[in-house]
Amino acid sequence: EIADAIAGALADGPLKGKHVVVTSGPTHEPIDPVRYIANRSSGAQGTAIAEALAALGAAVTFVTGPADAARPRGVHVIEVETARQMLEAVEGALPADAAIFAAAVADWRVTQAADKKIKKDASGVMPMLDFAENPDILARVSQMKEGRPALVVGFAAETNDVVDNATAKRTRKGCDWIVANDVSPETGIMGGSENAIVLISSEGAEDWPRMGKVEVARKLAARIAEALA
Amino acid sequence: EIADAIAGALADGPLKGKHVVVTSGPTHEPIDPVRYIANRSSGAQGTAIAEALAALGAAVTFVTGPADAARPRGVHVIEVETARQMLEAVEGALPADAAIFAAAVADWRVTQAADKKIKKDASGVMPMLDFAENPDILARVSQMKEGRPALVVGFAAETNDVVDNATAKRTRKGCDWIVANDVSPETGIMGGSENAIVLISSEGAEDWPRMGKVEVARKLAARIAEALA
Image (tube, rainbow over all chains, first blue to last red):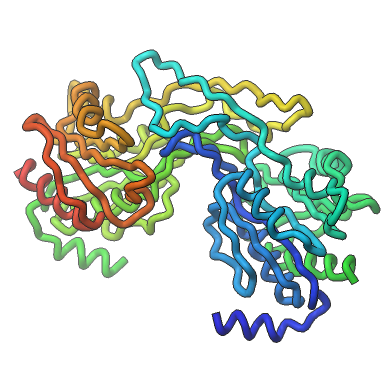
């Protein structure tokens, strides 16, 4: 705590006085008290981004799902489980100068999670589950009529046609940048320590060389500082 | 490694010369490269059981899904992800004197996991997923015609009617004991450090007082040693 406070006070960088919201990790969507649907996400990239922003002087609100990665230091951490809780935490954290949505949010939830464990019967047939689409946090914040953060950054984890999919996503959501990467199993990126980024903006697609997730975070934080200057 | 070897050599207890297979943790059943269905299970109870059995001299094969708990020491660890991989690992580890199935295995899997990330379209409708029932590892080993372990122990995580559900499960699966517990959210047992067990056997239901998961493991290991003596 004391070390964090000192680090915060020392971080007199280009983001001093700026508030940035960062989401990170997966969301877990309950099926019943013991089962859930999840996305694979260690939270490593989002955690590194939060720390890199704080190191440049930003006040960071870090909204994280149940992730394995140790929580970042020197930031305000809010722990959530579901997509709906994440949206609520993000909306509660605004206004902000920038919002960086690095979390791997589940697209769907089970409409009515059972409050008792669903029992397997002899039929071999899975009980029917009704799914509903989760709120789209990136789209909702990107399209705010009032109080929209000056810079909204989304992430796209793709397994194919990375640039095309991510470019279309940027337009569809209305965000400023998309940080896209290829998470095909053969890249070893998911759960690994490296990342290979394409940054999509109104200027087009910018390929970054493969580098560690901490280096990606520092480079992205520097670009955010430039954009907010 | 050396400490483990010494611990193993020192563990000249009542289970010396016995081989016990222990499963632990959740299984993850992939939907596509980034999404999966999971059970909540930290692996804490299974890990404690493996260590307690090893401390009594057993040679332990520990088959674990992707669990948060640190792997037990002094045992042979096999890491798996899905229910089908867990079954394969268990079958490969037999013969054994006892098999303790503490894992929270997913009942269902997605029949054909997509090899590319499923894209959300504009319809708001979730893509149809076909589910298939996973192999029932406990039932399959309990009902082996040849080479069945002398003692087969299943676990039942229940949220209601604990004794009735667990007693019926014991009969249905054909195992010797069921270690049943109430994992309703209000008990704080799931993800916590304590457990409240009912041990179901042919003798009936035996209530254990609420105690730490390590104490549950020691008590269970002592009972297993008695049963195999």
